[in-house]
Length: 218
Image (tube, rainbow, N blue to C red; front, side):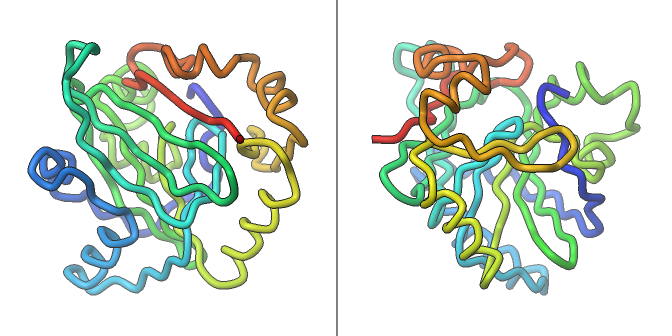
């Protein structure tokens, strides 16, 4: 995996209808609105007061996030983005290559729920040898990108974590423990990258489908 896999074994997995195909007409789809729609349609108990964006172990709490249609423009390829309404003066968004084949899943355990999106390319390169299907891989926490859904005291804890630091994000180690850098400089030292590398390539292999990544604090 390109980053620490999620340590949970997800117990309930719902593969979403092709939600990304709705973006061109809708323009944008807020995550909390989407989750409410899915919960009502599928009789699921999902509560969320806020979100935490997950990118290969990078974690950014936000009040909500939105899937957004991106015009082809100078990239020369269709794309979609995830824009996070981050807690505090943080700037968090990621742009993904829509020419890849993506599936989006709603995952649940008794404690937490999440949306995860996984491309055929990532599955083929990293997981096909070990898991029979993409859904099996996702159930084992094998996804590089996702949005965790938090509520109540759990959400307040996420907010307090990030408000105590001047870093743009915190980090999850491979053993599941969390690192809380104090500043943006320390954050980029820990991820061995720069804001420019993130903005121009996501500092990611091409098969992950990540084109741009913004993780900064004003």
